[in-house]
Length: 339
Image (cartoon, rainbow, N blue to C red; front, side, top):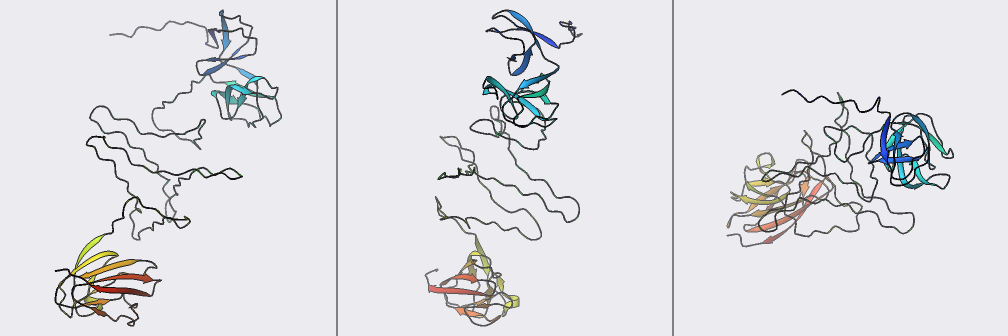
């Protein structure tokens, strides 16, 4: 079917018929929905008149500073430098146009080319911006809600990738608002997963990890905090390791966390992981009647036994080891019933 042709309603669209609810003086800014326009002649209340949607006007402003090319907004509830209601500013209100001549803080008007652009909360496609700044008490970024039985849209914040060669990737920061100058409290930073259905749903997981790479990135938590509080007991990784070999080079490899050791036979052993200040390694000899040798990392020592030398722990024993700096591990042992 052919399209129904549009009919020309006005000559160029520079002027739009508009009926105001109150008397409007020539030069007043009127808002056509969310689009600020300018009356070029007096219009009586509830009488249709023409308002201008194009052109360059000197618009009353507050103390904001404008450079040529800056966006100009109209805030109908603000006060201009002449103490009158309604003011152009550089951030708040409805988008009015673009500044075409610089205006400093004391200049009473800003020369503005009207754009007749509607501000909307829905923007299709990708958006490129220098900054995104909130205009009210909250600034929300929310993924698309899913329709019936469909998954909701994801929300991702990703810093820029590094350039070619050895360039570093950009950092991503999430920072609460700073407190006021006197006695204020900084804004809290909350990271919450999505809520599950109240009856039988499961809340979403929260994953914090470093990116992949030949060398793993570090994760640091609470070095500047007064305390670190957990709402639930944190879990540590658990590994099953078989004792092996008769020296450091052939011993089974332990990792940070909880290590359950099998195959002890009075000669076989395991090696502690690399020395990192504050690292912890727990070792349980699961064999009921055989001792276990525990070696330090290459060139290091455990419990002052000397570089590369093993200590021997009893059958059915558990040891808790803590790394001191990069040179040694220190451990405490206790008998336990692991049969």
